[in-house]
Image (cartoon, one colour):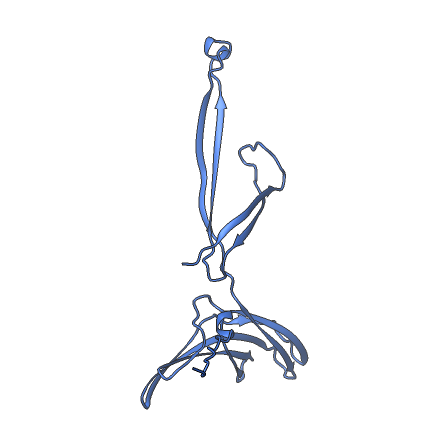
Length: 209
């Protein structure tokens, strides 16, 4: 199983204080350098904040003079943060010429279609793998160019085409026009990884004996 390792860890606090009082806010920046293949899972970051207090009792007594010290330690924060996985993003560039008397809003959705085949029969299932991503409203009688970004889920399958099953994707663009028929455009996309783009090495056979 692939794994990733942290080769460098650096924590810098904004106020660079060594001691904090109750009610103080601690803020800073955590920098990580992670080494490993892209397929390796990202690590979980555990954050534990422990407060330690020290005090002496009966000042001036024997115990005080001998340096008798009391301690108390308590954990206030204990959480685990999972780093977000890297996801590819599809940029959809739109140009909307709204010559109507109504405002229009574009929205973009990524759909997945699975087709199962058995001889001459087939069954297809289609579902949205992302929620609709809304663009900027285009005011009536204006023209606007904008970009809408759709993130491919990490759980999405690769595009597949075989005699048994096929998986394909499309970007569904809708121009939402109130009190009128919406306009729709479907754009096919192919979801692959780097390994799928690399052509396998073809073996070279020597026919001579």
